[in-house]
Length: 198
Image: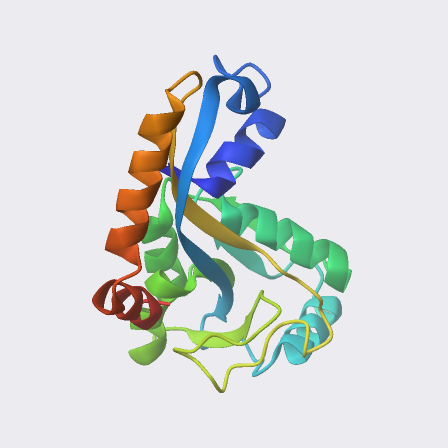
């Protein structure tokens, strides 16, 4: 299995990787795509992306955003947001999504870009406030939440998960793995489970 953000951002951020993703790996199947959502601590006085941008501009450098680590999708989304919105927000990298989300819920950082599946629990519990999704369309599990593009900050970023095999794997093996993976993840139960998780 492989997470797309690591696959494509890794070589750009860590040029000394001992492998070349385009030379050493072969795609087998895409399993799921995760949408990224912008969430803030309830103490942040913003109920929309536009309000957050205005608040950040009025308080340069006073807001911070947590990420799952340097080069993770949340880090890249945060930097993209800063560029699009023209704001100064401090990046606070963590060693994984769980400690980043815990510190956000505790109010140690102001905001975070996280995948919808992980943000749903804290959103539903009221520990964080969702401001927008970084996609071209709204997500089914949060149909009333506008996209960031709808709110004036055009962003489309996400994570994907898939299967890869070593380069040179026989074509028949790749086709078999793709077919079997597609069977598993195209069942109604499989689709519904993924949709409910965002």
